[in-house]
Image (cartoon, rainbow, N blue to C red):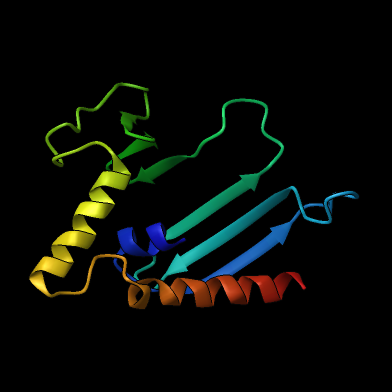
Length: 135
């Protein structure tokens, strides 16, 4: 959700959530769907499930008017599964390392780091509103 707001460059103004049946032993829904809309009109559809028969992990599919892109960890492919070279984008392909670099650079430069608590707080407010929809 915070990634969507960051990439859209616009606050989330509408959010809906639905969940599947509650697991009888765990007491939680094993499946959930979330829809988000940003003020600039961008939309996001999240499909979440613990019922996964495959490797653990996350991938993102970006569908736009200029192309389709699929991001899996440090790999990026187009909609035809053709690899896109992103080695020139950053000094590292390790997301944790890049996050740490940003944090320490912000301390050195006396500025707010990217994805500070202040910047992600609106997403937590949206998460709270979504939780209230499910109660």
